Image (cartoon, rainbow, N blue to C red; front, side, top):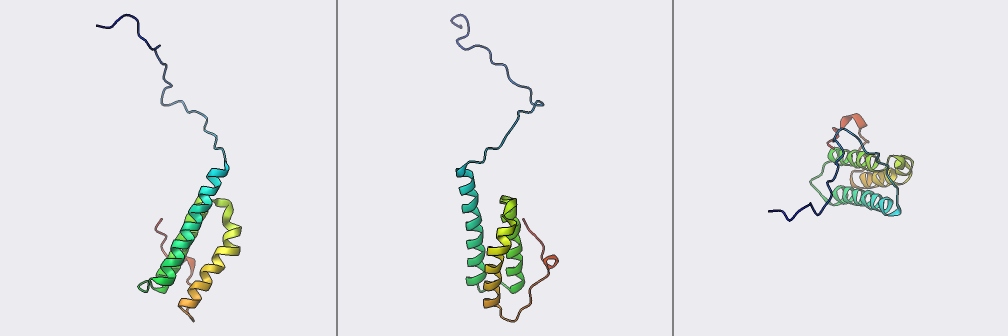
Length: 113
């Protein structure tokens, strides 16, 4: 038996088809987290290319292209910085590990992610 009127007023729920405005607030925390993820992607790709002796030149090129796609998906405005800083870094690592190999065409690799 219920002791009388409900202790909580009846809540009115919004129907599922009505969208609530969702504005993204760019806080410093979110930006720092994005930059940490980008740094992690670059370091992981660098370590795989430079230290894993089972990776071929073609696989390394594909890893670099997948890393570029993941970075630009995280931060679309990062393309200019990628081209100035990260791409030359990857190219240097590739040329040190596989001297004399020519760079692959971007269409030669199948992007996985």
